[in-house]
Image 1 (spheres, rainbow, N blue to C red):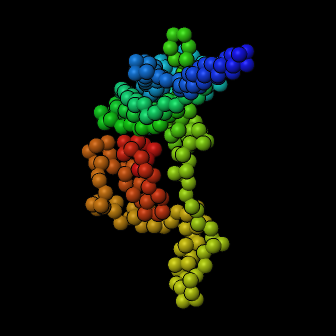
Image 2 (cartoon, one colour):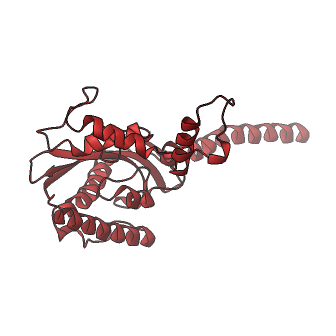
Image 3 (tube, rainbow, N blue to C red):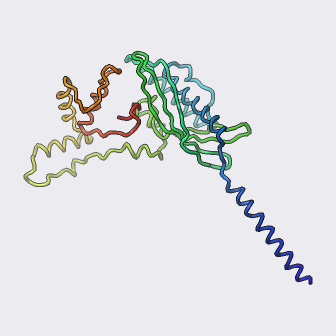
Length: 278
């Protein structure tokens, strides 16, 4: 009888553990989530941050700012970036280009749990700037990964991991703020020609063609002679294969880009209004 009671007690204990354990496991497997109301609040906060950066292109008012991040390192990086944007703006002003207004829109692409208190939000930024001299609106788009931490009152921005360069800085400077692990750098690398690898396919191969390839390779893969020939050919008669921007802020940059392409520059895919792409 006592043995039967012990067996029954063991079975009951096992059943209780079986019924409790799945619930415990379920509680731990639930990811940290961001509801729709919180997403809206976070979007507004991120939008304000990005808009304040863009506003530096108009005045110094937003160069000095209150701490935007809970991470000290991120805040130092932000301060440096804002100062560089102001310097770039002043340089553009010296050559006669200023801006009268800016606007920024963002959209959340996805969110992922980082830890029990942190999430990662992948965000697409679209920022527009109006050129004061012409009224023409230009702009750029760029993806970011924002790290946020949950607190008693909501969410704090910990870090802005930029996945693509901003249009508020010269491209070479803007790329310094792009995360090294970003896929962006996989899309901008070019395969340079090596002069050592250039050999005639046969002894009948045209010597001038060989020389042209070697000159191109030594120039880093670009054929400057071809660029000059293009400029000479089309400076007075427009190449109808390309869209013209005459009367819409000027066609100089577009024309120069065509010549660069003729000399071996590769297209870089991206939003057509983004100054970092063509």
